[in-house]
Figure 1 (cartoon, one colour):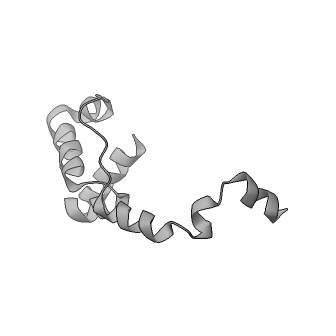
Figure 2 (cartoon, rainbow, N blue to C red; figure 1 turned 45 degrees about the horizontal axis):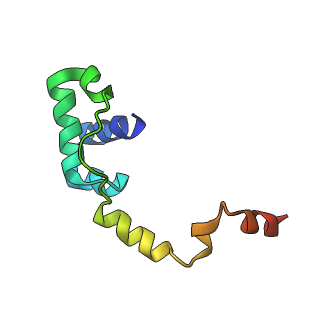
Length: 86
């Protein structure tokens, strides 16, 4: 829900759907769909979660994830990494 709210705030600030999608690591069609739900159905439409379609990883997220693989940032929460910080 917070990501949907963030998207609407950024759109209201004049950001394009593409720019919001990149910032939130989502597909721009998702941003358009959320905006459309809000316009047509208000807050109720935006807060309804329906299990339709499959998961989609945006190209921007893929680039960030690939650049992270192998770095210490990707395993910050691992037990061995936490233990080594003590």
